[in-house]
Length: 113
Length: 112
Image 1 (cartoon, each protein chain N blue to C red):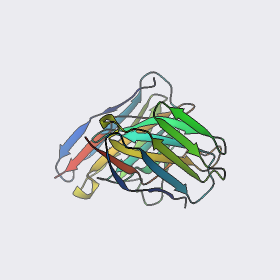
Image 2: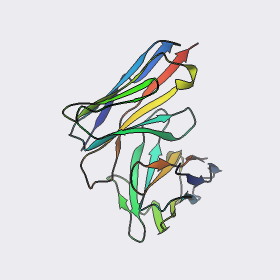
Image 3: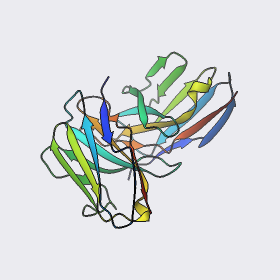
Image 4: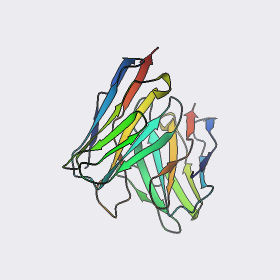
């Protein structure tokens, strides 16, 4: 089945650090990638949708200058959390889609001290 | 905006009992998907329903899509400990819109 790799799986860093998360579709070309955030015991909240070669579309309330998304190729999208603060601590999950359902990465657990 | 609610929020059942989670959307959906997320894991796609009134089965799991395409249900017969996790429905509002709105989820725990 379709495989989406997300790296790193866990990050612990100091406040003010910028953190980059990679999302790769390993065995298919993803026309669209999605970035979600999930707080403990809550649902997945869509942050942004990205298409290869174009600017990401951010959901209402998500700061595009805070969460930088680069979709460089049909198999790679990155999310950079700039100048992260404790309130940014969360589980970040990407998903990728060609045709059919979205396939999720394993997620990145981000902890800002 | 579109809202997708699920009930119940939590369900504790004895192993062997049945389990049902219900999903309701504030708007009509083009299709609905179901995902399972194990504790500490990521969502795993289970199934997609597209047609009004559609019913699909996967072994002990039965999925239904309502006639009005605004609600759906997942029923598990004779639960097993491997069924533990949070079940999310996710709806797509209309064709051509790739965004999925995830439901609030139902967390299932099994008492052995």
